[in-house]
Length: 147
Image 1 (cartoon, rainbow, N blue to C red):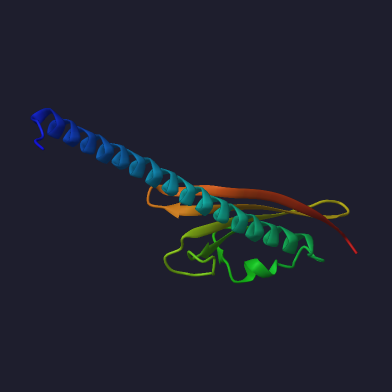
Image 2: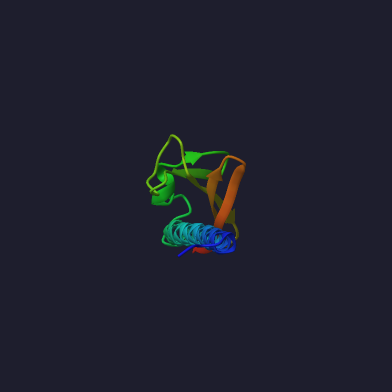
């Protein structure tokens, strides 16, 4: 049985088209996996950032005196006045070197005639080469009456 040139050429064209189809399919599938991984990372970052910010806000709300400092801020780096910076590594453990995440906390005490309003603003960001990317921010306040 002899094959003519048209049958051989059509076979090669079909093989080339099948290979092209699989190459396009692999490219699209890889892009979907990369996007899914990015979304999962963003979701994980947001979850932990919310937990860290709420932890600091709850510590401020549990203060009994305006002279107290929340436990989370006792070991934090004080920037200026009532601003603090907490540095975290990639696993959200506190660190002093090469931070991946940063929590900027501003603690403001406003005295009034009957007591003091203590307010806190927490902003959690992810460090990147182009600058910080804010993940979550939270504000809270507590009024502490004079005893």
